[in-house]
Image (cartoon, rainbow, N blue to C red; front, top):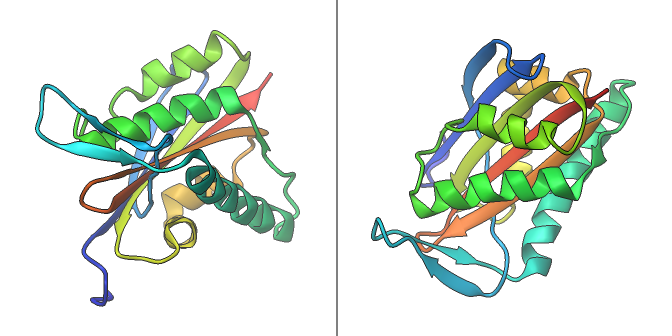
Length: 185
């Protein structure tokens, strides 16, 4: 494990098949961001998360999408289409983890999939989440961690056609990233 600028890194993956089917968990690595130039404080806890400018967050989210689609292309898989509605749901989960409202986890995954299913007909869903701190390129750090984790890699290579990505950062400089994968019917 690297020690320069690195304080902590963790990853987690979950697969959800058939809208409310079985889930599989795997530990891995990831990162998360947030939007708007403001500091939001969770009233039930003392932790805060910093919302960076929309452009900064969007660039990290775009970098993740680009790297994931490059990997898929190299392995003769179709690209994932970004859906902003899915990204908004992923972003909210990242913000909740960054603020400490929920732990770094897949807590609420079934609810997120249920919310997506109300707006997009789907047959399968999966989620990768990541946390990292101290890296100059949180997107690449997260994607590389996922690619070296069997559970995350399974999601990346999975039979999905849409995705949403959301990133948040708290006042400790910890990045949280959520990527949701959807197979649209």
